[in-house]
Image (cartoon, rainbow, N blue to C red):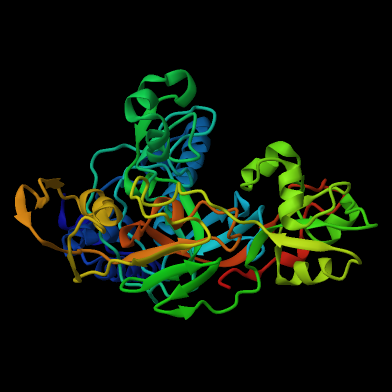
Length: 472
């Protein structure tokens, strides 16, 4: 190529040079944020796309075939959009829909959220080769939306903030690493605890395929962080205590209650006004009474002092709703209690329940734990699975990576997450700690809200929730 051709490659309007400079600056700043300076070798490619154009990025524009120009124009636009969405979804914002009632009444089923990944610092993807906007499985196709290799180690870019107590946080489900495709709730480990590992793996008709998912491909959950690394957490009669102090009052927090009214029927219209979802409304019978720890409905009536000739209702209420129900003449209310011991750590013999739990220490990066028979069940998964160690106990001696030890120093911070709908939330009380490498981001705003109990012409769109602050 002669000198004249070389010179012509640099002859562009000033706006083209400005565009090249801006994109080059954005690229350099992103690499600095990423902290992987080897990617600076790609800077000449960015410059070439705008100025020198040795790589024929838009070769198809020279075609005289209108069909080729039309098709390639669409391909070019789609590829650019997918790349843009990939980077935005990975490093800045992600859409998330509230699927369950675990955070009601703070966030409602059907709320669509903008989740800020920059708040706590976005993670570099564990699985970089993945399709944007799809968590792990393509709808309809029912196949993986990511390629398992390569898998990169955990790395988090610098964020604007850190996870604090009472933050609402989106995170990857910690025990969602192994999944029964046909039975995902409760998780695989709970099914194994109930039926045994071999029974779960061999009963494909009930549980389906057993699949593994990397950290960033696990289901997204949203809960409230009630305790951070280094805290002591305990639940006494449904009240959360952190480091010995009661958790501050949160208006959205609700519990399940058993309710009986004399002379007043709790109609669907009345329950609609109380904002009790159809899914949460229950009239107690003998079968459901057993779920609440009573042998029969008559046993429940006797122990709670309810009238056996009147119906007993069951639904969750926060303080505001409870105050309205208490205004009903002749109403009787009793909070639902639980004696079930199927909480974390499963098989740990702690005699903890959903309502009375702990005390429990939340692991902190750099903190050293003295290992013993009492705390082994609580921290075994964190040490072995989340921090990738071989952790065993033989004849009362603890071995980490085949070396005897009496202590362990944690490599990550951990968090304790709970739903505001305290009696209807599958949270840390059932599956344990959330490691820092599972943190996705913080929801900042509700941009759409749809009521699953309403029709499109009867209030399905909850306009009053648009642009609601989702951080509280």
